[in-house]
Image (cartoon, helix red, strand yellow):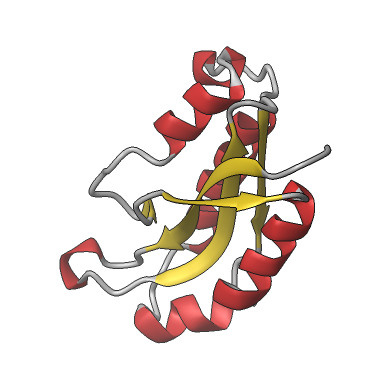
Length: 127
């Protein structure tokens, strides 16, 4: 990948109790339409989630995150969204919703190395 690429990213969040609006950043998803590139990096910190809700269903959160990763990767697992192009999957994954799995609003930037930018964003906002 030569030159700078326009990309968008969003933080992936788990909101254990939606009514309280408290969340934990658990990952980053990054997309570059021109390169048909979309990837995410996710880590679920059980202890942080349990601090917000001691009765949180961690298995359910893992299931949600697994589905998110499969759609992001374009895995053909029965979900028609996974068959869309990278930009369409990014738009669907980052649409505003009031659920336990949410994303921040998308942000944009320029980079020469999309994978390194994903790693850097993950280190800054999640790790």
